[in-house]
Image (cartoon, rainbow, N blue to C red; front, top):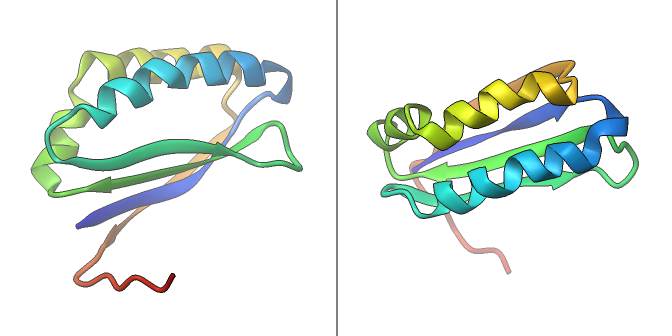
Length: 100
């Protein structure tokens, strides 16, 4: 399994627009082959900061996702919400154990 996680920062006055931009992306991505989970989680103390979290079955699934129309629409729309930074990292997970 592969995990992608990180932080995206944007103009805090554009939070509603950022949410509207992510909703169709999340819905379409969750239906993709090879996607396990996908979402954006907003920081309760900073309205211009969101954590991205994704789980994928393979590199091929991620590559396919990056070529989708919904991902293209999201990437194009990032300028309209004043993205000021994005730092996402990919993690390779060999084993996962439930702790709760």
